[in-house]
Amino acid sequence: MTPFSILDLAPITEGSTAAVSFRHTLDIAQHGERWGYQRYWMAEHHGMPGIASAATAVLIGHVAAGTSTIRVGAGGIMLPNHSPLVIAEQFGTLESLFPGRIDLGLGRAPGSDQTTARALRRNLTSDADEFPRDVVELMDYFSDEPRQAVRAVPGTGLNVPIWILGSSLFGAQLAAALGLPYAFASHFAPQQMMQAIQLYRSTFQPSAHLQKPYVMLGFNVFAADTDEQAQFLATSWQQSFVNLRSGRPSRLPPPVKGYLDQLGPQAQHLLDHVLACSAIGAPDSVATQLKAFLAKTGADELMITSNMFDHAARLRSYEITAQVHQAMFHPSCATTNQPST
Image 1 (cartoon, rainbow, N blue to C red):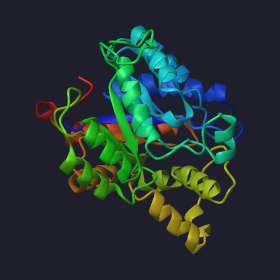
Image 2: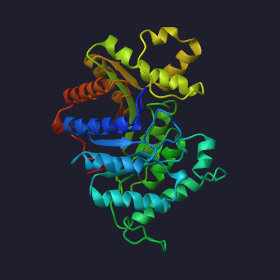
Image 3: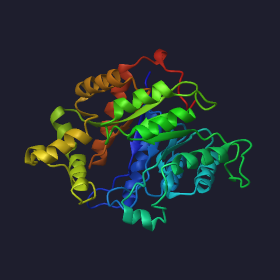
Image 4: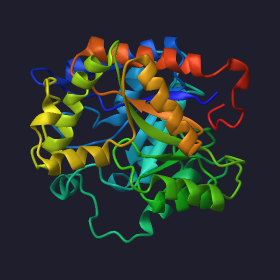
């Protein structure tokens, strides 16, 4: 059975606040746990008016404290923004508080624009080799006998699964070389997805962390009880993307009837491109689109994101997706190559 997981950006909707967003995040995680989702990840972004997950490790602790079995983690931490030691200490703390439930996905993008990156005191002139060195340094902090003189306390000797995230071939190469699981951001940057999967699988080097390649793919789902309702609800995220790419980042707006018909060809092309890995519709439509995506990619796991303006509708989308997942797979076919187990 291909596991399904949840990616949450803790969206802030128009007229709402981060505090409300965090309550919704915990509610979705608690429902997701009951519905059988494998893990619940949050992503580091900065300076984005519609995304509240900037202090990612803090939010992970909030979700982990309010759940009991679902894995909780970062998808991901943007490592260039941080000292590897600090991340080792943060996730060593989380693993100590919630043993066996914490994941650490690492990305090399800043998760912000250059002005915000400067405010984070990030070195904007770093060379291309710094991210791989930082990943290896971070992994060493978690080892039983670190080579470095400084110890991560807590952190040393703890089993915090590390994932490499990416939207290009760079992350695929690094994950394969280090023998780590790989998560591709196909939910918003699908253009190199198939190349990255092939490269990762063909060059994977078994390690103490993982014996076989393991690919997780991001996938948007906008599910509702009817196709028409789902298409309407999806317009909030479509508007958000158009606003972002037009230099007008915003809080998540309410859905608009007939939104796609109002767009010019350039904006429509943008959405067709960035949201190509999406399922929109009623349960049968979603099932058909999910099956086609899995058949095309052979993904070991899907990370589902469902960004909708209305919280109840968003919950319903994840519930429908869980029901579709249950109908698609029989428990006796469960995979044994999950790096989290």
